[in-house]
Structure formats: structure tokens, C-alpha cells
Image (cartoon, rainbow, N blue to C red):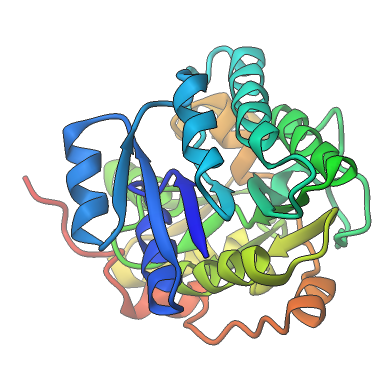
Length: 303
């Protein structure tokens, strides 16, 4: 399969490209800079110059592909409405050339769109008033193509996709612990986060491209819910720091921003049982806590 990928030079993208190429697929990645193009080509993929705002480049990339995988997401987090609009418009441009072809279109979202405080399944509706509601418009734009002859599906990734050289939520927690001298969690720390190793997520993306039925909603979560207290305590133990509880008010100033404090206090467990059964996806790589203990997370940052 000739696959056109957006976000291939990002954090999860290189692992996905490597997985696709190892499985015999040919990959072309969207590149908005010379550095991104060089990274894609070093992975064995071809580069296609453009950006999420260059709709003509997105259409032309999709037109010559047998399938499209959309992982890129970005913009100004101070304007979530504009980020959602940008993502929706890009998905529409990517999907239009695939109409009535039966070709796959896999888009990316996050499990944080799901309702809080219960284990949500792939069949549950996302929370339109929730912490990540701005991702829902992209999900709907992608899944709408299922009624237009496209094998469209959405992969909702866990909030922590962990592995070497992670630069997401967990490294931010670690950096805050180093800076403040304490590893903190919110309240009793019983709130739960799904987690998935990057290499397991890469396999899921490949399987979605190869065989996910049209309209599928998939959960990229190898662990349904790791408590934030266990994460904070592991960080504390490895860094030899105390672990403490913060009130929501204290967390708003302790962490990077009030939004990040809300994220770290969010209880969002999800099930991936349907996804695993549907695609025969069996995560095999280390858990999040194992990665914190034995991976590269605690490597002293370069000065």
C-alpha cells in the first residue's frame, strides 16, 4: 500500500513509518521544512512538501495514495476553536480525493475526549463539554467519510504515548518535579490515565490502515488507567524526591498552567477491548511505570 502520512516526523510518527515500511508499505510523509523532509527520508520514506494549511498539498498527497494516515495536529493552544477548524479543514482536504474508492483514511484523536470518571468504551459518545472537546470536530469530519465510500476510522491515543525521547505530558511532570523539588499529584491521586507504548501504538495505526472497517472508533490504550499517584510516586522514588498531594487550587500554580493542572487531575480510564478484538491488536511493550523505572525518562537533561 502507498500510504500518505501527516505528522510522520513528529514524536510518534517515526515509529509508525518504521512499522509501515517493515510491513512492506511505501510511505510518503508531509514535510513543512527541510529538517522534516530529511528526517522522513532517513526513515526510508519519501517527502512531500506542504503543511496542514496548504490544502492543495494535502489533496495532491492523498490523490496518489492507496491510504492516508493523519497524525499531525498543531496551532495555538490559546485558540482552541482555530485549532479545531484547522484540523477539520485538513481532514476534509485529505478525505475528498478518497471518496468512493474504498481506500482507508485513518485520523488521530485522543482518549481525553471521553467522559470522565468511568471506563469509557469505543462505543461511548465523546464528551462535548469535556477537557478535550476541541478534538471532536476532527473525529466527526473523518468519520463522515465512511458514508462517502471511504474506509474511514479514528484512533484515539492515550494521553501518554510513552517510549524513548518522549516530550509529552510525562516529561513535563518530571521537569516540574525537578524544578520544584517535589513530585505532585492532585487530590488523592486516584484519577486514572490510559497509557500505550509508542511501538504498540505504531502497530495499531498499521492495523487500522490495513483492516479497520469503515466507521471504526479505536482506542490506542494498552493500559486502561494508571493512577496519577502511582506515576508521581514512581517519579519521586527514582529522583529521590518527596511525593505530595496538591489541592486543585495549589495545582493551578504548581504545574505549567491551570489547563495542565486540570489535565493532571483528570480521571479518564478507557477500555480498548473492542479494538484489540477487532484488529487482533496485542500490546507487548513495557508499561508506563516500567518505562519510568527503566527507560530514558530520568536521564539528566543536557545543560
